[in-house]
Image (cartoon, rainbow, N blue to C red; front, side, top):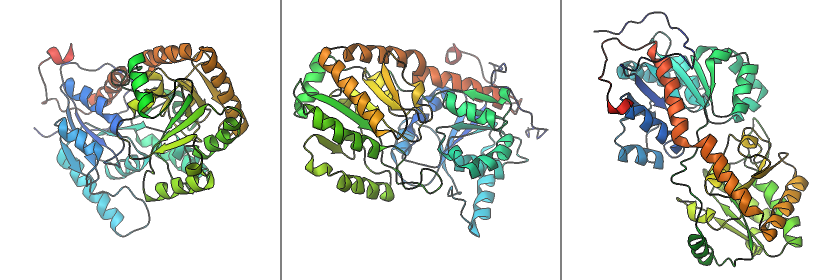
Length: 421
């Protein structure tokens, strides 16, 4: 039976879902390498019996590998997720529309701004619900994009903001309250766990770190400065931490800074090399910078403190640190301040070298007194309670099913069984 292409309707995020029917979901991203945080969400949607296909660019990448291992159906996007003026752009959008028509989704869930724009432009008349899950607020920090988004976001049925901060931004843009939901991406609290004493000793020994050395870690890819926001400055704030480290290290010589993360792309790697040169990283024995790391957990096992000094961010690596039982210093950027409270971390103004230096001093003093260990335990408790990726995936699936329910074909039904219990 052909699906009815009736009038689209907007469904509230908390609307009831028909538990006896599945929805057909297309999940769209602009990367094959990043975005691995969708895995718990895709797995939860499929566990409930929904039909899920992930659309992403052609080519290899760790996300594609994970999806393939999990047996998740994938399709290559004919759209290149670029909106530079080009004769091929309309053709790419038309081909994306044709792909969506073939996949016949009830709901399309996008995770990047370029993907959301593409779906908004190519899906009118297809009778699909559009759900934009926002992984970070960077694009909204451009006044020009905010002006455009104030109009275009109305084409979405629901915006799922990845943080309270981003949800507030969309409400200020005029998106109706009932069409904005807040669901964090979260962290796998079963995969990221506090290292026990034995594991910590082994990890620190592998890196040549004595017990009395205060170890600070920053885990983040290096992104090249953007032209639209924070012009000339890296958004992850590596420069802020490296500048603060200079002052801090001169006073606290029994300290080590461990940076984990390569450049995200060629431009990002060029920026990383510039930082290494500018701050004489290779000549400073208190700094180690590891690139090409796949599993960061053993690095957290060495750490006493995590720092996230971003200029723009959602929740970032602070969730991995918290799940690993490591206290954090975070900046005020985006949703970072939501990841800690006064008991388990520190919040400093974004871009403020002096404030970050002072927070490093406070954390080091607690390391020497033994108080920092308690902050780590509380960070773990807070992360489990608020940011477990399984809980977040279930909340996200509720929203997507509710949005897709208004567009679902009445002929696609399934038996309610163990997968829903």
